[in-house]
Length: 105
Image (cartoon, rainbow, N blue to C red; front, side, top):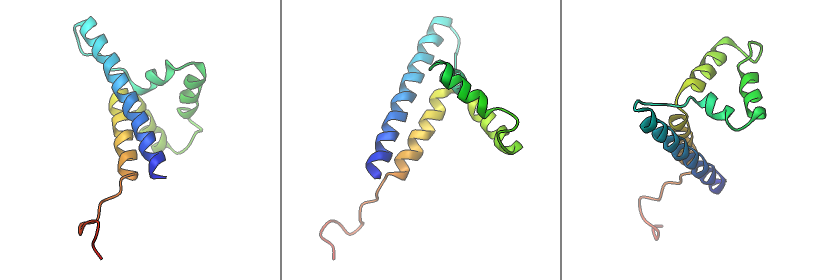
């Protein structure tokens, strides 16, 4: 399970680096900061992904607090959200080494 969590963390980190690279290239080209929101980044993956994002933002998808939080997350920069996801997955798959060492009783 730890292997899967670490692999998912690596994939999320790679996506964050890719999104950050695209944002930095666009920022240099526009001579002003450009940050791509997560919803727009997911929408670039194709029409199925865009339909998925829109279905989550419908009014009958859940309680109002869920919709508010979900809308807030989708408006954040894609690289930042993916970095947080990568960190959470890495922390979930992390195993702390014993303090006494390898040969402790």
